[in-house]
Amino acid sequence: MAFDFKKEYKEFYMPKNKPGIVTVPRINYIAVRGTGDPNQEDGEYKQSIGLLYGIEFTIKMSKKGDHRIDGYFDYVVPPLEGFWWQGERHPVDATLRTDRAGRREGVDGIDYAHKEDFHWISVIRLPDFVTERDYRWAVSEATKKKKQDFSKVEFLTVEEGLCVQCMHIGSYDDEPSTVAMMHELMEQQGYELDITERRLHHEIYLSDARKVAPEKLKTVIRHPIKAKGD
Image 1 (tube, helix red, strand yellow):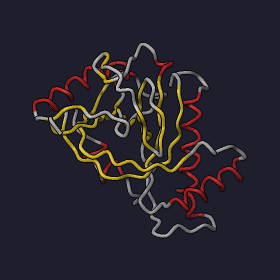
Image 2 (cartoon, rainbow, N blue to C red):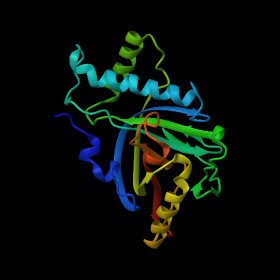
Image 3 (cartoon, rainbow, N blue to C red):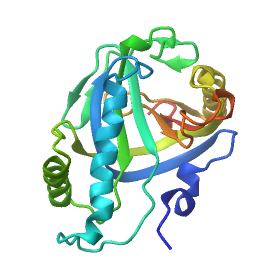
């Protein structure tokens, strides 16, 4: 049976719809960076999703070709994820610099009324057996076979560490109510928000927004935290 990250790592992908504290380990992703409204038809965000799945499925289906990946095992492609921010943050060596924009509508630095101001990094998790060499092979192979430019896709390593997270059920625009609960638990447990140049608002999409009604969408929301005073 194919390895399913959602089932094997339920604490990260299938949390309850009440907030909890987790420590997220170092994870490798394929990633595409961009800006703008994610709802724009044929916009940069939706194009980025196609690029990610193109590489992910090239890796997954490598078992049927000549390229052999050491340690390969069959797996279910993990869900789409995203790191989001607004304001003057610029990528630096797979990290981000931020102006520490003020909190709006319950989410630090996020104003849902101005989606055109979004900056994002769309990502899909890679199995641990995938090295940077295998990633480079997949980009080359997908470019050749699909006759498409995959140069925007990068290999990204993130270690989120200590976070508060919660399963949000409903529209993306209704996330602030869930985030408010997360921050309440965070403060009760003696933590404070730690959104910095290296730590960002993170979402994991468990539903296909093209097929699921907005009020039934399932999204894991995760915020980095630290002990008060650290």
